[in-house]
Length: 323
Ligand code: AMP
Ligand code: TRP
Image (cartoon, rainbow, N blue to C red; front, side, top):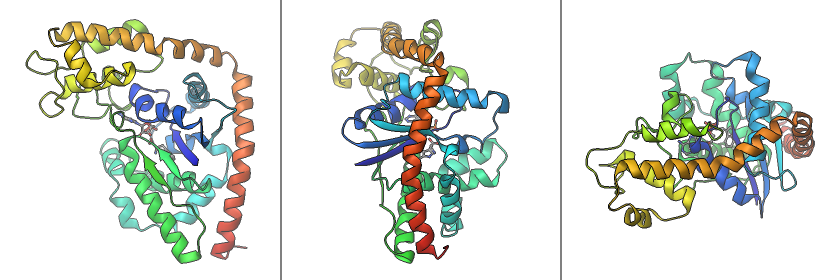
């Protein structure tokens, strides 16, 4: 099956990104045709530092490799290197109802914290273009992106109905447990890179910082280590993370930690996270020193992805009468 997904190069990649998205990508690359992009055009819809931006893009590409994406199995490229993304987004914008964009939760949330520009408003249309350009069947993402993939589906269906069958209609794939990793400081909110530093664990974070963040993560009243997202959102989130990184079920963990304190559970969790991330950190350092190699991979990816993108655009333009 054809798979597409992407992450914005914001300079941070956290446990939520890994458990919600990338961990699924790694599994999917074995038996599918995978296309993964560093979505820089999406990143610039929020304030960013122009001087650091190209480094952030390269860092994200290195992170993809360090976390286990294999360039022999999947295509990796930078979104802005293939102009057809922006071109298709424009065309899809002409059939996208304004009301649908106004309903998007991510847009409404972001509008509260930053200036609203047209790019932020059109963000989901560009995301639809990313997905539809590659005739994608499956889009592995975290829960927060489900609404955008639903909009993509409806745009594909609308286009197909209006102009004739052109696009594959994609489906979201959301991992059950990793779908929504919560903030360490406010466990009723999702872990997010736009929140304060203490609320998330970065994948390449120093060990000591990981210990501090986990030890100071918000827990709940009571003493029992029990999974109950409503009454005990803090401990439940930590149990969920523990389970995903150890492949022990939450039930098993409740048993193991039945007589233990929050403190000792957190200590164990911090060491688990540190050990889990250690090989990733090592590889990330290596890739960051091999800039030419990483750029070469991105260029190879671009060439192959672009030939798919061009063929879709050809058909789209013909169908729309733009010849
Ligand atoms: P972003 O950092 O917003 O570009 O997100 C990249 C990917 O990570 C998307 O598939 C998101 O759905 C996923 N993601 C972001 N935050 C979380 C979270 N807290 N839990 C699970 N998945 C997440
Ligand atoms: N909008 C996604 C996010 O904020 C990133 C993204 C852009 C994406 N284009 C995509 C994800 C296409 C999946 C498919 O996380």
